[in-house]
Amino acid sequence: MQHLLIRQRFSDYDTWRKAFDSLADTRQAFGMRTVLVSRNADQPDEAVVLFECADADGMRRHFASDALRDAHRRAGVVEGSTDATVLLPAE
Figure 1 (cartoon, rainbow, N blue to C red):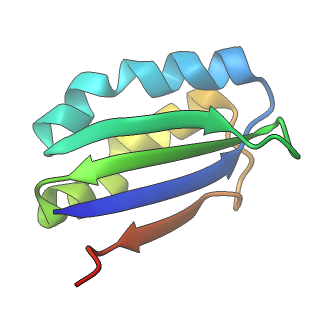
Figure 2: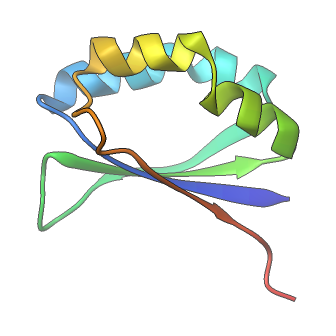
């Protein structure tokens, strides 16, 4: 099991959240489960999201998908602001 940590900036939280929520079924189909959705306390225009990913290949396909690119456009994600970190279990 891997986790994916996403940080990204947006122009309006409500718009961002609506686009984020619209992909819930898509993420689930790719083996992703939302663990945490929050905002950076020091930068309220930044979302911090943690996903649990049962399928690493599915996670990569979702991250490269047209559906996600379209959601980012609809969400008002600031171009170049998305930072994605794959987290592996500690052994």
